[in-house]
Image (spheres, rainbow, N blue to C red):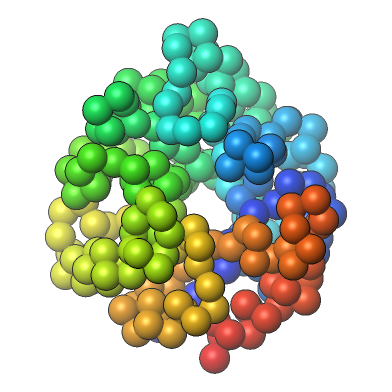
Length: 233
């Protein structure tokens, strides 16, 4: 298996520099972790892009939860995406559900019109979906989708390990809807990684684990380095 991907949540250029120094392969750029990560400002992306040379996936999310909001909110999010693209962003993170827990294909399609040609991650909305297998099949042909950020369960990796192993096996078997890479995040701990790698999962996402002093403190390069070392064994 090739070197696993380590993605780290960044809020600022300072975070990005520390994550890169610790061995991160990619950043997920967000703002407002009190709402579990919203769309950052264009200026923040520009500062991060100037600071590091690793890929940056930019969150497109208007509020906490997994709804795209009303038409006005969605239009505002599309405008933010256009500004970010104009600044050079070419990788994104998004994902919306309707009230029934099904993928909101209208909202997702509206954003894909703006970010067409970009690679993107469907984030942990999959862990709140009423039918995660059905969601995968519904999204399978959407352009640019190459990753699912998932814990396997809404409560986190502890509860989702069996689902993650099953989905990895279905991906390895080439089942329709399972072509996108599994990026594990959400309550992920170092002790999970051995069995996940045994299941041939090769992408890992950390947020709080890179911040031993909490979200009010920046990313700690040494904390990231611990993960990079563990994943490289």
